[in-house]
Length: 296
Image (cartoon, rainbow, N blue to C red; front, side, top):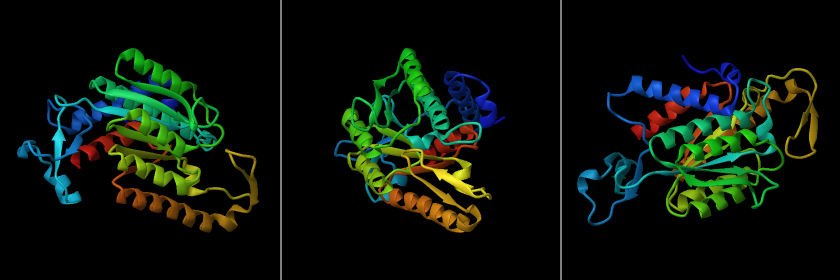
């Protein structure tokens, strides 16, 4: 059974939804794996003299033409920072969930999974009006159950409003992370794309592992409007009035270009991209993501 967003939304608080998604992911992993394997995000480091040759990841060498050594849990626990865009555009959604609600459920489920395996997780809520430029709230790395509950509380209380300021938030995240970490960024990337993509590349240049979960509403992808419509910006006071049938073809072409450019530009920088529609079952999305990371 997959967790349809409409069904999930009826379960109640974010804590319940996130836990249900985590349980769905674990069930899927159990069915698709050999007995005895555990959930884990793999981590690598560049080969250095003294490292054991038997730990070289030859698949990584084939793709990157560099030697990387697999790091095991006994060597280092993973640290992951969830960066969640809480700008106005993330408040859009006429289905069961807004983009921000969907991103919060995915982030909460990932926090549960990471904490369950003993890894440290932190949270950065990106948006204007906070103590730091581009950052509305921040929770440092930790892995205790009470820490995860505080993380979920912060996610549950976040509201989509104002501008994104994502580049400033990512710079803040990189500074707070310090040494190498897994950066999981949940955003629609709608605001100032020409600055957002370089900011994501910057994280890779600082040796962080970067995963972008680009979260989009089905209406943004399909543009199913017919009647004359006033389209309002959710990040400022601008609007346009349009005949959807006249602009649908050009809109869809621009959306395809935007998504393809995002994938290609970030792939060149070795940033992993998962483009998600909010009508997809979150447990299936995360299960697919984890399976792909393990196979890489």
